[in-house]
Image 1 (cartoon, rainbow, N blue to C red):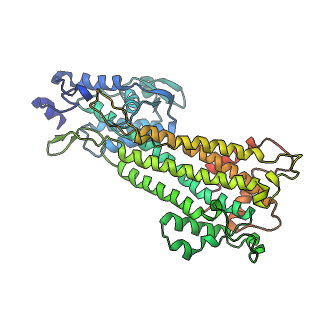
Image 2 (cartoon, rainbow, N blue to C red):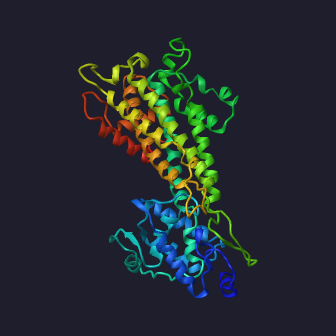
Image 3 (cartoon, one colour):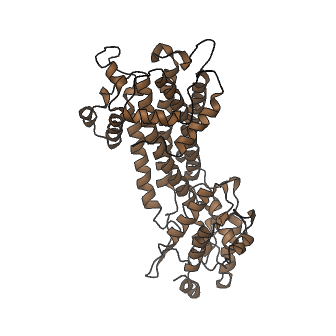
Length: 460
């Protein structure tokens, strides 16, 4: 269809015209290949640290999948090279900054496409970063010579923000599950009650996430000797919100992540470039490259994951406060002589402050581009980069709470917490010992971050 468009001399954006505000400039049939090559080169204007390998691999996979929908007017061999690069672990060096999230993730995808034509930079484990053409050659692959429409098809798409969001979503789900487990430990350490997780109570407001978290907490706390020891006490009629409202807050986070997954499930299997080429021969210009559906869902997820950290820090603050916890001050064996875990909560507080800044929605801003032809953009790439950072900082905040909750449970021995909380406590103690003498908590926090990252505290 694209070859017919060129042969017939039809006016089709990006095939026989320039790009963006240059769409009114006519391109002759003999110049179509040069036009596509120039597009890839000129759009590779990214800056900043290179994207991690997992994100680049996600971009390769998702771009190939979008093109395989069959509406992009691109030869199968170009798509095959994307797949071959993925399988051979030829990873383009892609600067992380430069996309405004409309017209696609143009600059990042241009850096990726440069390697397909034997230019740019690529990284292979056996050789490190170097010229893209050499990386292809070492892998036994040959670059492609782009034909009409193909450069545009490679660049127009939302694969940077989609790859970032999908990977962050995976990690955020693990943290959401772990937050229930750590929160259950904190509740037990402070002799809280599971009454607020009652099935009938949470079912009276049946948000899916709220109901799932309450069920999870009931399971984690089942068989608790600590709970049994104060079951008949009126020491606390109601727990503070950070304990009592875990189903409502953690559950709302899960619901927000579900929304991001629904959006990603559509986006990852969609044709997101422009124009699209249909079997009828019709070539239609539109806006499927605009990242707004993703940008809004990503910002929602950013805010939600930040709340997971925010409520965790409040539980940490209570754990170190002897006036509220019923535990030794700062969880120290000798308060005064030893500061215990006082400063670990400072770290959580600093991280939550940073998270509150990162959670600002990028999608509410727009800066016009291409001489005002592209006068509204999504900024979804900015949001997706921030979502990755939000997940990273939240992991650290939860690691702090896990450290404090485990120390608090030590002071409740020989009574055992519920089965799930006891299992988590044992897992932590297998990696980090009880804090008897003061020592730098940084190493302990790092060890617990590793536990979280590997899913060892994501107890179902």
